[in-house]
Length: 318
Image 1 (cartoon, rainbow, N blue to C red):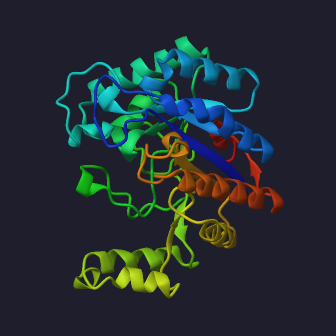
Image 2: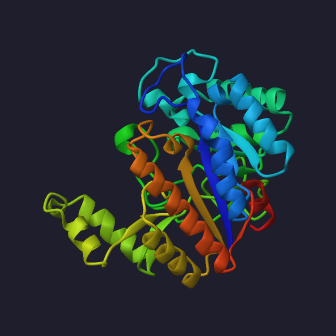
Image 3: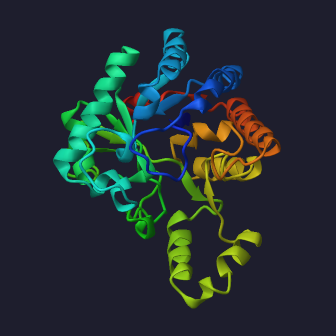
């Protein structure tokens, strides 16, 4: 089993869809975060947005990390602040997959070129902002020469936010072609590496069916999901220190191993390193707990023989 650590490396302005004016002050914390990764023998993949890769200070920090070979950098497209700006600014259009295919391509091309120009690398991996992935996004990635996508969040439905429904997707990497981003194709040129979301219970399919049934029924109003969670009968867990405690992440890892999964994909957002910039970390105390959870889990992975690889390496394992 291998571990990927993918960080959505983005602007400070959580929950807003500002075309211009975004700040990236959280990038100043990246060297400290990298030291944590170094101590745990982890090479992370930083997936960067347009405001990040066009900011002089952020560019300097990322170049320094790249030059020492301690990380990988990929693309993370927030369409609302990636030129060209031709669409109306709203929540629906914050999902890349909802934009016209050609506009998607021009935004992705613009961000890709900014990474090449300002960081001196050719990125190979991608994640859509807000999980806004779709067939046309996959086709555009192929046009731009990308090899790995990591936009699918298994067992999650983003329809209420105008996004895709991944509720029937599993955390299983697969090859796909430009013709169908959601169907496995053994000869496909690209690989999908979903983030790791699963259940503490071993039968993921059964748990997912039950969860979907409860979420659509009157029992949702009776907080049945929460009751089952506390009873440890139905526990959906994200492999993310923003959302899950160390104990939960360890439990999910052991269940994934029992189910013979070969890749784990831990993820979080760079603004979580600064209190008050995201809903996950609001105070200095929460920041310290977030960093400690990250360190504890990465130490657990290393102690259990789970080696770290960068996201682009996944194409060699699928």
